[in-house]
Length: 273
Length: 135
Image 1 (cartoon, rainbow over the protein chains, first blue to last red):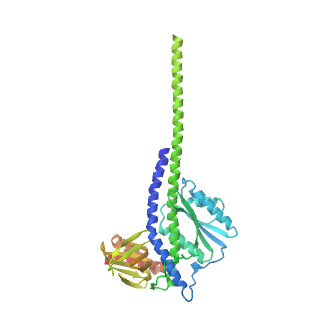
Image 2 (cartoon, chains in turn orange, yellow):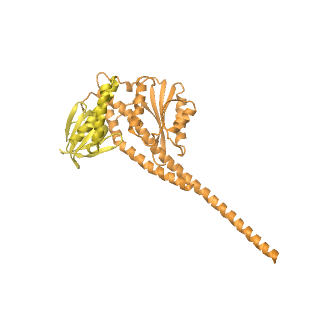
Image 3 (cartoon, helix red, strand yellow):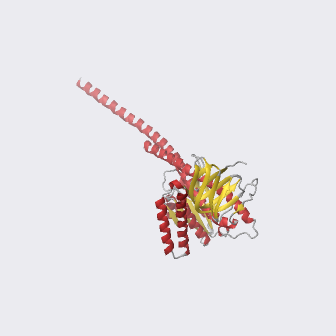
């Protein structure tokens, strides 16, 4: 028993390391993207006629799309249930709007389908090894729905990895894109633009959405394996205590048997004498 | 002024290149352009094509890249590519087959969207073949 939970902890530790390597690999791209986007956005805002881009358009939120990143499997303590509780709260706060869930991960899909929520799509079997293609597919779908005005806002609910011991629940808006603010001390860079800022934004914004979803998937799987490690660690400890209790019990019973047999032999011998 | 600059090539999945190089040639969306040390700040979208650079630790290197952006700033060239692979990792036969397939699709495509997708696929395959040829 203890060996199983210990082995599961080891597996999660190895997977966590791999997931973190992936997360680290995508960081340079993400940092550059945020900076470039902020710069281009400012350049675009400085134009005489501010470009009218559908992905920036803020509408009244009547139809909300929520992307929920959970896990496919359980055994990770409160990883999923905390996420579901936060989602539930979000739903209650937006009771006036109609809401659809795009479920990434089996647990989230099952949980909210059972409770009669409307699912716009489900993605099972992709969270364990997040691929950029998957994120792009989902992002394309979201962008398409947003453009067609089927939804007015897209939110993302996810467990973000902090340390092995803790993760934080995050709910953030993905669409309409809120342009990153650049720090004040950084000055506007005077780029030569090969294409118009507007043209660049048209290509940049969908990438930004793709990246947000991809990063969320990476964060989620890291947090999942971290939570699982902790869960398995305490399971190992519990199993250890149970084993100790059982061993004590076993020894007691065995000793009782031996004592009884000795008494029997002794009293048998006494009877013969 | 230094005669080298820092070249970084990143895809969403990994940082592929991060080293000091002497020169680079990039497939801009509106045509190829070269970068040397001390280049003025520049932002451009990238098309599908061949990216090559020289003067790094590994000598001349050739990559096939597909889409994305490049930022030139303070002697840093940062390439954000949708995908990028070294020429030596490219399978020529697979790329040729893909080009063939894309050309077929292009002939039979009826809607604009279909032919655009096929055209993109053809450009990608062509970029990989070009990279192989120029490696």
